[in-house]
Image 1: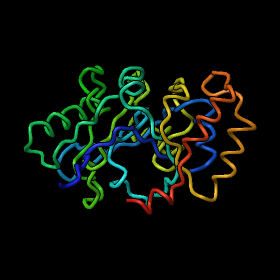
Image 2: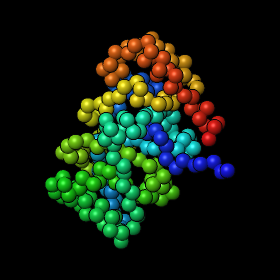
Image 3: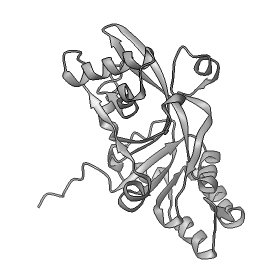
Length: 240
C-alpha cells in the first residue's frame, strides 16, 4: 500500500535568521514587522507597499527549503493556537495575468491605496500575493502556503516611496516591530528548530535564563516541555 502523502503540515511554521530571534520569541512572543510586498499597478509597472504582518506557513517539512538563510524556526499548534486563539488568515494567490478577474481586483486595490482611498478599498492587499514573484519569475509564491496576521490599523501602511521605507529597509522588513507581540503558552509550541551548533546554548538558555515566557512564569516542567521540543535542523534535513 502506498504511503499517504500530506500536502499540508499539521503545524504552522515561522522561520527566522538568528538564535537571538529565537530567544526573543521565547521570552516575548511573536512580533509583527512592516514587510515590503510588491504590487501591480499596470503591466511593466511595479510598486511596493509596506504592511505590518506576522507570517507563518503550513507546507510539509519535506517541502521546506533548508538552503534558505532563515535556519531557525518554530512549529506551532495550528488548530488550538493559530486558528482558535490568534485567527490567522490564509494568503490569496492571484495569477500573474492582468486579464484574470482576481488580478484586476488587486490592481484596482493597489491604485486605491496609492490614491488615498478608504481602507475598505484596499485591505485585500494585506492577505494577497502574486502566484509568481513579480521581480523573480522563478520564485513560485504559491508553494509557500502562507498565513498571516495583519496589523489592525491601515493608517500604518505606507508605500515604498515613503521615507520610513527608504531610510529603514533591512532584509525585506522595516524596524522596529509593530504593535503588541502575539503570545502563546508552552503547550502551543510543537517544534523549536535550530542548527546543531546552537543546540547547547539554547538548552542552557531555556533551563537557566528563561524564567518567563510571554508573561507567564515558567515552572520546571514548562522548561522541560520546551527543551523536549528542540529539534536540530540538520536532523530535519537528513530525514526529508
